Image (tube, rainbow, N blue to C red):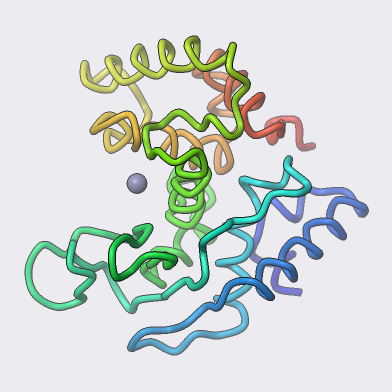
Length: 223
Ligand SMILES: [Zn+2]
């Protein structure tokens, strides 16, 4: 069973939740095409894309990624023109816009890396799907209004700014990429939340509590 072997999040669920997780995976794969571009895509790759999609929305039984039609898996990193050759190839994932609207691009090796390196705080699949959650209210601004009740928006913005300051001061263990802009902070700390929940809860208890409320999940509570 691929999910059990590769997806730590799934492994930690109880029997009923595993069943729910599998159902969400099937639904995602029925809705969204997963295509390899200059790279062979296996059933396992498809499952890992779907798992990346389902993990952040597992607390929302009805959630669907509206507007997403296809996920493209690339053989490597790519540049801002979605090319895998030429200069500036520093992207591992991206929510497409313009002619790439309705698509998400992920570097296949980076996707697999997110599931295989248990001690890292990085997960490009979760990162890009969290961008889609943020975008669901119409704006990619690090404020997921579709998930966050209005009265919690301001405290979230304040905490986000405080944590970004810490990153800029070199006093944070959060990936510095999360300090480049507010729209990147939310996906970067979401990777941390789902990959290393116990560590995040210990080092950033208030941030953990806010993410727990946003996602309606408590991954640090897994046995
Ligand atoms: Zn990003």
